[in-house]
Length: 506
Image (cartoon, rainbow, N blue to C red; front, side):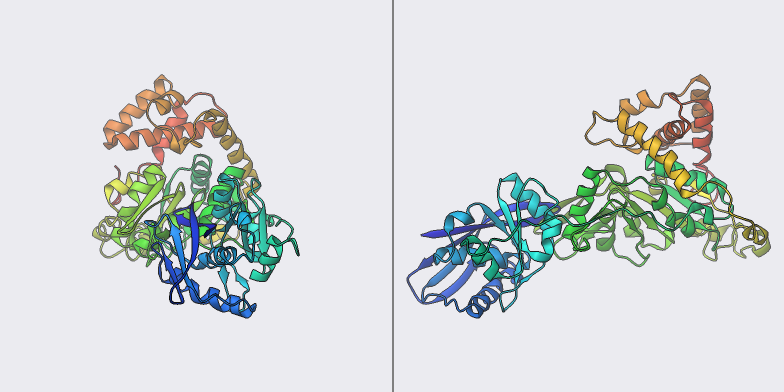
């Protein structure tokens, strides 16, 4: 007789159902796990043996074989402990085998039988719901998994609780979802003195999810502006919150099972590796660009990042997804993020300040910003200079709109775009529009068309740059409440593309 239990193997943010088969046969006593397990899965037999011994359950003097099917899929992680134990208990007739056919389980076992939290409870619950099974997991993972309403989640603190539940001795109630956090931030745009043009560009970037590049001397407020971007972005929709939380679940970043409605804000250091930014490493884990999915990726000191890191951004920025290719895995992660990059104009940072002029100008600036390739720079919709603020302006009272006021305008523009792209699965904001659809929604008036053609010829715009101007103009029109793209919208959009990779124009 072969007893069966079910668990999952993770492939990116997807969870694939794995059948755990247990067979007891005559022969020398042994305990083997087969089916392409990694080291952590192979060691599960010792944890299971110790946990059962702690509950005074002795293993029979037989040959125990655990097979993880499909056998050609690599099994990684300690979450296989619980399903292995349940399959073995079903084979020993300690728990009903028919109950295991209706259950997906994951969890790590301690040597005394306690269940230790594991990552990936949310995508595991989605997988269990897709095959109409309930999920059994550690108690700490219950609030996270319970967000999937289509399945029942049983969250236990120990293996003995699971055994008693399936035997009807002590039924565990279904887990309840964790708390939803969406509290507003404390950083307000009014804290930034001056920089009205940069604030306007930040509003446009937030409204249409347009990538933005800022150049300015040290202390001019680039990081301060970027830190206030989450405060003007709308809350995540339920679908976006689920997408983002599944990535964070795989990475073990969900706090006590709660799902946040706030958009992610990631700011990696410029010493980060390719695997840290794009994804990879052991198990092909998601990188910073995927952790920033539906949120903001802020890369300060942009030219200081290794050239290999910068160039790997080119494809994800365009497609909104990244494929991490390894010898044993090809994993696909979503990464539709808003990229905000900041840089000094040169190595010393004072190229544009007459009072502190750089002694190596202009070669210093050309060499420094020249580290950013033309194709990568071309992918920024908005490029602005952030000049230093005069000391006299620092004593002035707060000016301009607050983050709440700007957020209201951004939310209104986002709603216009949501209505416009309601019939499209992969298009949510203007930055996603392309081809015939972009030409249809962003067709400028006669004067605007003439200005755009003139700018394309004058500044040598690429086809990508031409279309990005149209997208930005469409977003400006949405903020303006205009149905069509007009001359003034095109003019403003063009003004945000006049900083090239060195110090001049495209």
